[in-house]
Image (cartoon, rainbow, N blue to C red; front, side):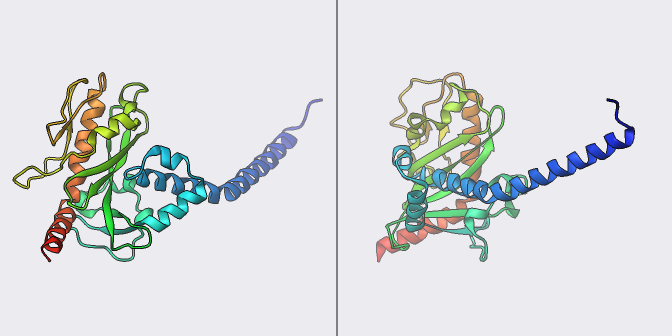
Length: 250
C-alpha cells in the first residue's frame, strides 16, 4: 500500500525521536559504569608500575579500589616541581595535556607507600605519554626513593602491531627496565634507551635495555617518551632526591 509523503515524513521524525531518546537514555544509564571502568583501568595501570600483573589480575574490582586507596597517595605539580593545589591527580588527562606546551601542563605524581602510612613512601610513580609507530603509547614509571633507580614500568598502546611493537605491554619487555638508572654519574638525566635489535645482554649498562626485533620505531617512541616525561618531572625528581639525601644525613 502506497503511503503519502506526509505520512513518511512524520513516521521518520517520530522514529528518529524515539531512537534518540533510547540512545540518550542508554548513555545516561551506562555513563557512570563506563566512568567507573575507566577509573578502575587507570588504577590498574598505576599499580602495574609497582606490583605484578598477576597480583592485579587476582584482585576483584573492589579489592583493587581498596588496595589503591590504602597504598597510593597523589599530588599534582608543574614543570618546576611546584605543587598545584586543588587538582586531583587521577583526573588529570595526560592525553589532552600532551597537546599543550610542556610548561602549561599539569603533572600528576603518585606515591606508593606502606599501608596506612603516607609518609613511608616506597616509590614514586609518574605518567608517560608519547607516540609509537601507528598511534599513541603511554604508561607509568616508578622510581625508588633514591629518585634514580627504576622500580617498575607499565606500558600500553593504542594501535601498535601485534607481535612486534605491541610487545611493550608484555611483562618480559617491561622487566628489562627494572633496576636501570635515569641519571648518569655526573647527575645528568640520560633516562634509559631501548636498543635496536634483540638478543643482546645489557645487564652491565645502567642506561640501555634490549630492544624488540622488528619494532625499532616503537622502541624509539618509548625512548622519546621516557626522556621527555622524565625531563618534565626532572625538577620535582631532583627536589625529592635532595630531600632524601638530606634525610639520610639526619
